[in-house]
Length: 317
Image (cartoon, rainbow, N blue to C red; front, top):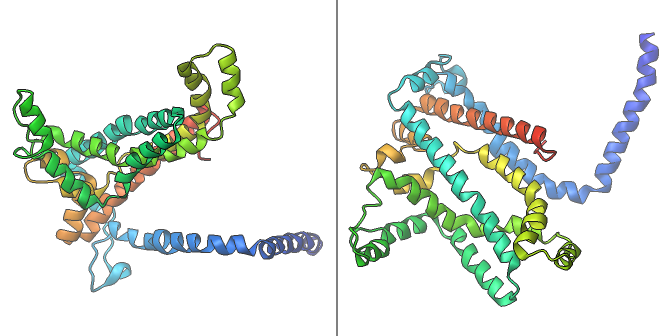
């Protein structure tokens, strides 16, 4: 009976493989176009995951990853018991949530406003002005921030003094660090982030707006009842992705803005990993901290996606 079942299933399997290879050979150009992306993720995203195991070992370079002694959750426990654990978590979470609350809606508003501009020349001008900061080097952006917020010659403090106020030490006062980081990021990326919303708005049927005008709907009512519902699937997908990286506060900008006076607000997980791993050569410990951060972000992504799927039909999967 086993031989009969094998013989009956083999033709089906062979036919399926034949159809698969036929499809690949028919669309080989598309698969060739996809190959570099697949190779990139395999080489730079999946293969390096082999080294994650050093988070559970006392890594010794001379012995290599495989021969280094296994210590289990020792480095995770050390991080959880450290006196700076809660400072790192609260600073990273604070910046991430602040960035999500302030930085996420602004590109939506910008896209809605640009979409309402009827003058083509003015629209292109606004788009160019808002897109341009995205292409600036992070070092240049931080240099501009320091120049504008300087207590002696910064434009912001000159304006404050002109209005009768006292200069504010934006770069050294811990209370201002999160606002400086988030608002400068909004200025730099809001134009670029609005592109995907403008692309979605381009698909809105003009007849819907014409019918709404006939019914006497104002411009705000048309935005609220036509444009926003059309944008909602895109907004939900991007919101899920942003919430999934709420603890993924970037290293470069924080490190460039960081100094000893604002350390209580600027010390985040990514800078701590750099200081302990690269500067302090504590490779296993820094790998454990980085892995913890990635796991938390992954759990947030799964949770928010599940909530979105239950509340709405739009989700990542």
